[in-house]
Amino acid sequence: MASLFLLLAFSNSILLSSAHYSSSSSSSSTTSVSEWRSARATYYAAADPRDAVGGACGYGDLEKAGYGKATAGLSTVLFEKGQICGACFEVKCVDDLRWCIPGTSIIVTATNFCAPNYGFPADGGGKCNPPNAHFVLPIEIFEKIAIWKASNMPIQYRRIKCRKEGGMRFSIDGGGVFISVLINNVAGVGDIWAVKIKGSKTGWLPMNRNWGQNWHINADLKNQPLSFEVTSSDGLTVTSYNVAPKDWNFGQTFEGKQFDS
Image (tube, rainbow, N blue to C red; front, side):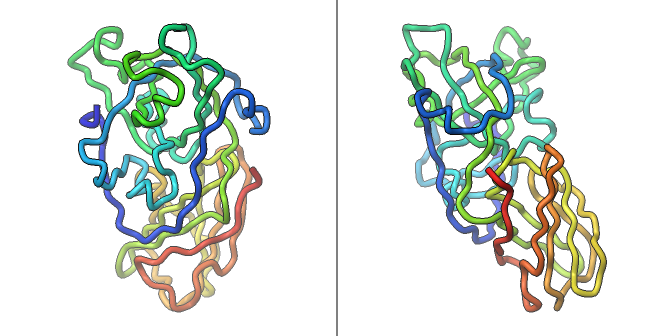
């Protein structure tokens, strides 16, 4: 199953945040963003537990990034070309009393892409092909809601608000006038729609999505404190002034303000 994943490494140093699980009895404490919808889920097991597992959203080592195993790879119709990266979902097993663990649900963050396999039809092996809504989960998370023998399980899922400790994190990479910023640990709806950056000598400059939640710009912003304006997919904006000090450097991570969760 791991072969379906686009594994990408991002070497910045990132601070830790906590991942979490829930049961249906406690899900009322989490604000719902959408109604329950139907999908299916499978699992994968890492070939070596020591491997640093990345993903198509660009978060790099998911353990160091604070997501742990509470992650999901999403099929084409859910992945939205990377826009969905960082969004949180509540997932529960349904319609199969043989394999489901009653009264349980899990909370996962979208961190990866389950690539389609057009060598198979969508209803005959191409589980991540359009129009299928499909989640691929680490086996440790899958087993929170179903017995592993279930394999390809019918589930229900819904978008929920992400709860995060601390502020958004901005990991700066690049070189020269090329600046790439990975944004993670985003609360609220979790996914980002637009980003602007500002130096002390510039106005607000729009950044472009490179891939996943990596945003880039060509601008000479060295020796200037950096501010960020982040807009989430629900239209809310958080502005963090002077997040990076004047002497910032590539390879560093800084913490800004946070969306309400």
